[in-house]
Amino acid sequence: MPRLICGTNWMLGYSHQTQAKDRLIKELFDTPAKMAAVVEVFARAGCNALMSPGIEFVAEALREVEQRTGEEMLWIATPWYAEPGEPDTWKRSVEEMKKLGAQFCFPHATVTDALIDRGNRRLDPLLMDHLKCVREMGLIPGLSTHAPQAIVGADACGADVESYTQPYNAAGFLCHLEVDWLARIFREAKKPVMTIKPLAAGRLHPVTGLTFVWSTIRECDMVTVGTMSAGEAEEVIEISRACLEGREPEVDLQFTRSKRGLLASGQDG
Image (cartoon, rainbow, N blue to C red; front, side):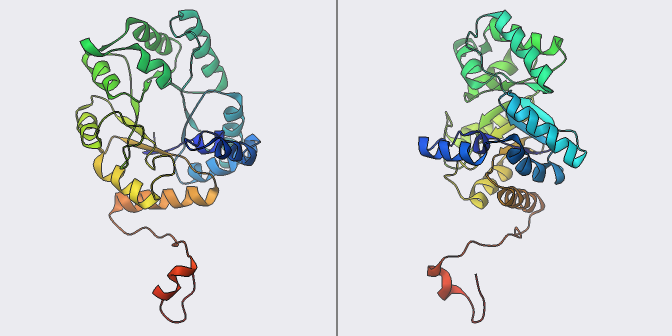
């Protein structure tokens, strides 16, 4: 599993900003091939893992990426269940994730976070049964969550999980606790954490957001980041490498007219 994982909100229409932005994303990525063009950049850089809902649109894009690159893509599927208390619903969903080609099955936060026994620091038996079902069907179980109590509860009750996802960014966007508390929970977690939303859904500059996350997680933890273009993918990959290597990222700065006076004579933007 690479430490940098390709996120998909910015290719599937989940901007966490406005409905107009969501529509724009869906208009830009109206075919799996357009999604594949962005994911391919991650794959060729060795970041051959992707996190998304378990849907055919993504499955088609991943198949195309594998054909283009020859690299196997690792798919962390985060399914949602309309009836989270019905084992048959879960089983059918896990079967569908496996059929689509996902290797990992992490129930979405809308499911996980409703089934945390916070008072007793454990997971609801229904959720434990689901994780067991995932393992028995040959997929790797984990938890997609927005609640740090899921990490604490899973560890305390010995839940069969290999990792957990959790929002984590310098702005505290969608974080249930202060980020210093989250950092502490991550350090004490028994399994690797897949952090998500490092740029706070576009609210943080990539250098700011990625530098913070990479410098405050463990070597076993991961960062999931989404982009809207191949160029953006190249930038976040280079910035991440620079963070891990302790150097300045080699990316071109964006240029506006107000910065012209900052340039030496003869330089352009």
